[in-house]
Image (cartoon, rainbow, N blue to C red; front, side):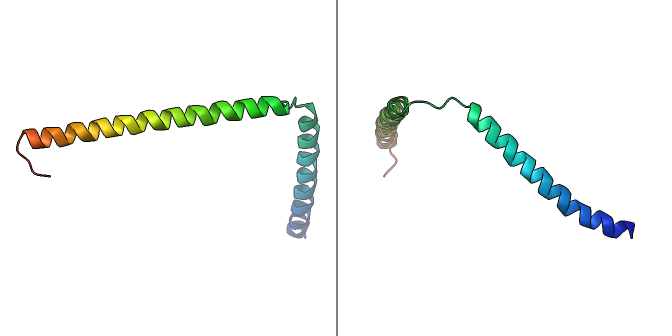
Length: 80
């Protein structure tokens, strides 16, 4: 009989714990200071520009290293 009560009480505990979690989460989310739309737009632009700059830089490095390897292989007699 005691085992049955334990099985019945576990789902009840889970439901009450879940309900408490969502109430706490909702309460904390009301305390958050959300950024303004313009701040989000500006930050997004900074991320995009930075990503493009690094992509171009890495592409240039890749091209340079590739050319250097081809030059080294040709210089020392390996065929490509």
